[in-house]
Length: 286
Image (cartoon, rainbow, N blue to C red):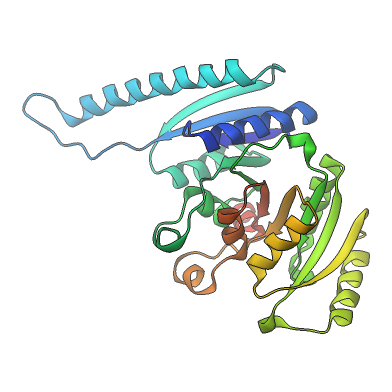
C-alpha cells in the first residue's frame, strides 16, 4: 500500500479519509495523491464572452481554490512529512477517478463516504458506492476518522466461493499482515441461506486450510439478513474493519442483484475495505 489515491471534495468525510491514508503511508513509507474533481456547469457562447474562454478561466479559478484548500489540510495534518502530490481535474467524478487510477497505477484508494439510506440510496447512490463496484484496486471507505494503526480485528464475511476468490484472499491476507491484525472469517446464516452450523464450519475450515490463513477464527452467525448480520457480528466482536469482495455488477444487473458490500459501506461508521476482482481483471485484460 505504497501508492495511495485519496479523492477529496474537502468534506469532513474526505478529510477523514486523508488522515487515515496518512497513517497508512507513514507505516508503508508510501506516497499519497490527493485528487479533486470539478464538475463544470453547461456553458454556452454569448455575444460578450465565448464559452471556451469562460471555461478556461473558470477551470483556472477552481483549481486555485482547490490548491489553497490542499495546502490548508496538508499543513494541518501531515505532521510526519509524508510525500503528497495534488491534482485537480475536470469531468464526472466517478469517471474521472477511474481514469486517473488507470493512468497512474495506484495500489489503494482511500475515500470518504457520507452514506445514505432510503429512497436516496436506491435512486442516487454515492460516488463511493460506484468506486466500490468498479475500482480495479482495493478501496477503503471512511466515514469517521479511525487511527490507521488501531486496526487489530478484521471481519471477513465469506461466501465460500473458493473457485473465484484467489485474488481477493491474497489481498486480504496482505491487508491482515500490514495491520498485524486478527482475521474473523464469518458466514452469516440467514433463513434464506440456512445450512447446518456444523456443515458450514467444516467448509470454512477447508477454506482456511486451502488458503493457509493464519491468526484467524471461524464463525457462523445466525441472523435475519446478511448485511445486518455482518454489522451485528462486527459490533459484538469489537471489529475495527470489514474486508469483503464485491461482485462488480453494473446497470440493471446491479439493481436486481444488489450488493451487500455497498450496503455495508453505506451503513457503518468504521473503515470498510472492498475489492472487485472482476474490475481488476477487466483492467489487466485491456
